[in-house]
Amino acid sequence: MDDTFELATLGVRAGQARTGFREHSEALFLTSSFVFDNAQQAAARFTGAEGGFVYSRFTNPTVSMLQDRLAALEGGEACVATASGMSAILTLSMALLKAGDHVVCSRAVFGTTLQLYAGILARFGVETSFVSPTDVGEWQRAIRPNTRLFFLETPSNPLAEISDIAAIAEVARRAGALLAVDNCFCTPALQRPLALGADLVVHSATKYLDGQGRVLGGAIVGPRKLVMDSIFGFLRTAGPSLSPFNAWVILKGLETLQLRMLAQSASALELARWLETQPKVARVHYSGLPSHPQHALAQRQQRAGGAVVSFEVKGGRSAAWKVIDSTRLISITANLGDTKTTITHPATTTHGRMSAEARAAAGITEGLLRVAVGLEAVSDLRADLERGLT
Image (cartoon, rainbow, N blue to C red):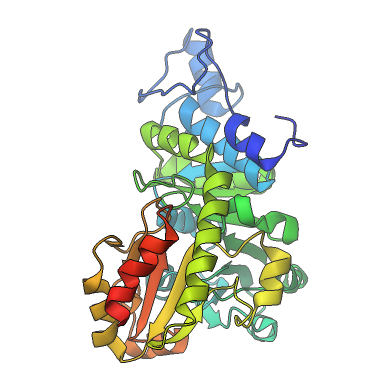
């Protein structure tokens, strides 16, 4: 599709491929395999000499439509969709790294991402150095001759720390390493890392790309050669594949992505401002607030602050749990990206498998709460939180 179209148009129209029935809504292809005209065509499809669909583990029309649409939204050339956000990070890592390679990773990433790099990949001979998401000098000092990948997420989960994508991309380029950015919290509606110098963008499509908490999914977007020559081959062989049904659901979610992200970001900013006025709140973490240490960078790099607000309650875990247990409207769940507002205690849920020392280093305190703001009235969300803060 013409890349001169605006983001809202791409979210609705990009990637659509109609069948002979000329359907208006994207078709859902629930099939494991595809039939060939003859043996010669089958052979050509399997070798890649002829384009076309072969087997839904790695080629499916509905999944392809999602891949094309997300690539257009991110400003990338190609996309590989996977079964979940974590399978996207694993696919990227297994496709691009080998034993003896070194990764520089922000220490402010999702807890399971930390476990993947520090635990699982370390067993296969891939070593990772964890650095500050905001100190570019730490990224520079962590480089080794065998450094192959930089990995970060911005805004970070759950403290909304903002990494300077352009500056870190330049450090990676000079080191001969690739930079991959997890764009889960902002999505292309608010931030486009490839335009800022990143080589690859990773998504948990489970979150805002779907937008209604229905299905799991993941994706990797980047240059065609890198995505199709390296990453696609791992997906084809290892099979962390996205189901066609999940792809179809996420496609429908992308149609309202920009509307949702802007509306939820506006509500999150309003809620964050209110939280800063509450006597029992020690600190609010939201990049849309002038009090945020990287507010100016966020203003340059992002279209809005996003929909996730984290705040620290005075009194530690017991006070934080009181806020959670006093809610009647907000959903108590660790998922985010939903039109329904959710709340969780990161130290005992999303980051609970980390050691106490690692949580302290990452700033995950016992009084920290994370609220992923949905589409409810902000006045109702305030009243729900106020019950546990008074």
